[in-house]
Image: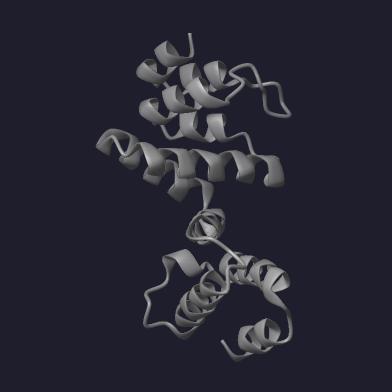
Length: 157
């Protein structure tokens, strides 16, 4: 935590948000309890930046989403879709798309592999290219069929 504190003290508002983003990813802050020093630092600095108007609450949520693994994001997306939480569905979907852009991941294929039918449908409705294949040419439909995920295959057809 001391390393991150020094880094955060040495930068201004906008750059602090970038350091905060790096901290969240490197330390998996979203998975830590508020009593863990690194998470407490993240919470304290993000609150200070929000008070100063350097970032918004949505920015902090996005930083935390981006720090999560794709699998965890997909699970949470499925959960908020099933709860009917439209706002959180948008935030999670946006984070997944951003993660896909930054990491070259094909989020739809990850959802297909995990057999998350509701997430597959939500991604198709919003952004997903159902024909985007992996490097070896396997498409979401092929992977769903190969793994016997009938409901997911129906969603992709």
